[in-house]
Length: 394
Image 1 (cartoon, rainbow, N blue to C red):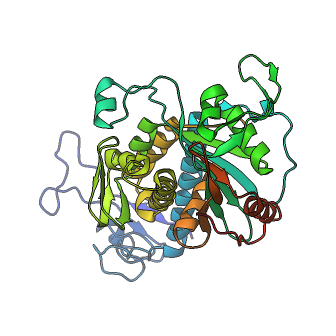
Image 2 (tube, rainbow, N blue to C red):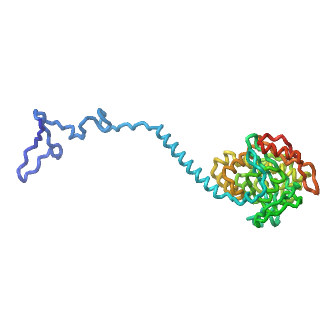
Image 3 (cartoon, rainbow, N blue to C red):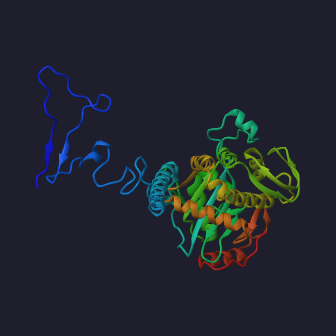
């Protein structure tokens, strides 16, 4: 039955409207057709049809509905996806930034008459006495002098394989035969004349390509990648990583390099580290003892760079990466993964997972160190076949 609205009679013209309940006009009421008045009284008190207050059906007026419980599973999932996306974007950006900073200056395709390759990967790691970019104050502080040209202060072969990694120092005073080679600037091929020279002299004569050619010719081992760092770059990397912890077995001094060390555990800064790896006048077997210190320190540096305190700290990681990549010269085929593999292998050698030795020496002639040919052949054969090294060096 249709509901009807009962309205009060209209007042006469000009008469005031009747007031009820404190001046509020009486509201119309509904009639349900069966004589029941006041059907919508609940409406006039602010209630909503369907019952209850704001809290829901049956709840007292004025109460709030309870919040639904948070969906932690969904929140964790969204957070994990967001974090993964940030890490991916950051990693990709870091990779391209680092890759763009690599100085790929060395072209190993210019090396002629190369030996066949073997198992594993061989890196030729060179520390040069380059003073490029150094001010007069830098040279004085680091005790480098101002010699013209470039020579090698250290030459190492790092073999990375499945049967343990091996780091071999080639003394810079090693007596080597200078082979035929292609000039890095002229492109002219210079024939072999049988002449002998110190290993570091070949670098001074025609740079990285002749040094690589000479190492390959005198060992029979193919070099896959070339890495070089100068004085200033070396010191900058050490400072960027916050210094390198090392144990010095016996104290020594050297006025030429600026070394002044006591025995024991200590942390070396860039200046001290350069003095440590360059010192040779303080030792009787000058070049051989220096190569041992160089191996020891480079392995410790690689270990320091790879620690979580460096890798997981962006305030140390990026300065270290920047200093290292700005300072290194590598071959044109070198990638970041190759560089990471090299550092990881050196870290392993420092941790006892690999082998380090000097190139076996049988004597000297004219002040040059002569390699033990039989031991060198055995060593090279083991490296080529990626076998565990059994040869011991000096």
